[in-house]
Figure 1 (tube, rainbow over the protein chains, first blue to last red):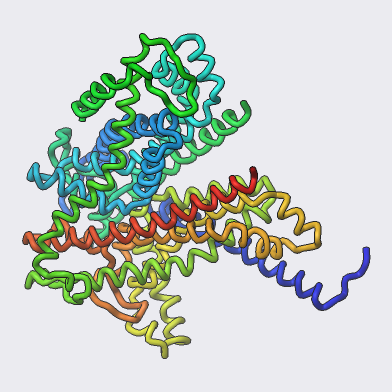
Figure 2 (cartoon, chains in turn red, green):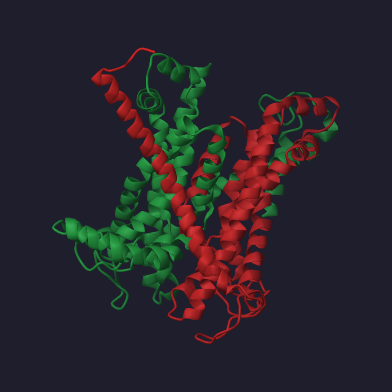
Length: 289
Length: 338
């Protein structure tokens, strides 16, 4: 090879090396925070885990012992209720976008709005639900918390459903229609069945997204240190418990807050990883055919 | 919820049979007997799609109605009044608005170069076996719930800021008005850094996606002319995707403006306006998170909802701009391919 000795050439190579090093450094910078946070969570949260943590109710302030079983169950219940409200709405709205609306003005408007709602501040949605549900019913309730989370889920599920249905080849629909099946049956029996896996993972991602939400629960489901299975009563959740406990002066409560934080992060990250892997698999399948 | 759907379906059913539910690009002339369930199903999906559309209007309307008391009591002056005094029932939004805008601006300042760097690393530099795990790790950063960032920021990060970063900044740059006051670890600077870490994954994943839209031919031509990787990025990739990058930044900004739990833990919650990045401050969302359940008077609640309305309007505008920019680049790419 020819020797490149020119100053300009060396300058270009040096600039390139510097910029590439910087971009590599930013990748490391991003990873560094993730590992730092996870390390601290495990380090400080793991000691909180005990049988009592998962089985006992909280103790009064300052008293050692007890657990957060009410919060664990509360989080599961509220997330489940939110899923029951949000997922059908999201799936049907997404079906409209992919199967009927397509390029119509209405479909574009719905897409636009749901993309904005996806990123809208969750605390504002909490305020909204407070105004439409908590105030008229004169009380905080698990149902209100679930509705707030459902509103956050709806746009996410809508868009993933649409994206998944778009992966269904038109030939499949045409084949079913040619056999005389009505369109609604084609959607239910052919399209949905084809993307069932993808839609399930989309729902999982939406669940992971809302399971860690705290802001919209602060003034909807509030908190409750006791067992509660009545959706019309305030319900304790891990997230709001973290907020209250972490801000408290008691060491025991802070340790529990770390434990709760670790638990919720593990749950959310595990769900996200499973869903991500499944999503990329479905998309590969979809693009192959 | 069910009632209007069926009502709409019936009206649609009465009008529909002659021509059938024609969806654009769909084969026509399906058997008649499928028509009624078809129309019902279509109307149901249409109803829920419309519900999504109505949702954003409902949020705006309800917040506006509930904020009315505050605005009629304080007038538009509410927006630029500094005082926030629950004891005297006297409220002004300025400290919270100021804190929201400044913390988000600083977060963007930190997050944009880092996100672009990661996106360049992922698309132009990293070998394929490294792209997946690094990309997944960045997505994990987005999946960590915001309350975890807040709690971790308060107990793990803030003490380090107080012990190492802030004394250093005060020692070297203490003459600037930006670095006044005691190094407490909680305040505008810590909140902005945490916010930046939280929005990095959002900006990164969108920039990475728009970088991937650049035609390989354009990049290869530049490489063929002897350009270095950086020159390709600077002269081909970035000019080609400028609209998308700006869209990604606006999306990150929208996220940062509304972020609640992470900020509430570390910003210090003081209704003050200070030039110093070390002093405790407040944002709209942190004010709401801290004070909403404790608000006693109607005027207090209404003022808080008015803050929520302001936040909703700001973020909706910012996110709309982001969306429009991202749509433009998608169309631009589709156009250039055809």
